[in-house]
Length: 46
Image (tube, rainbow, N blue to C red; front, top):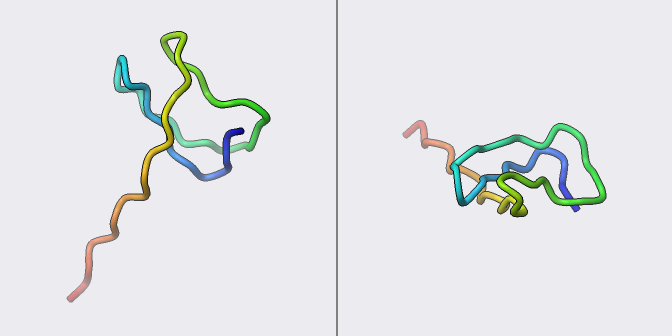
């Protein structure tokens, strides 16, 4: 299941997407399910 607001990356070609609508299946690229990415850290303002 794809989650709203999650980023996904294709391990074969490096394509990245941002999910803007939740769905019942995982996004697919190059005939392989895309992997969910970890959140990127926000730079501190210290």
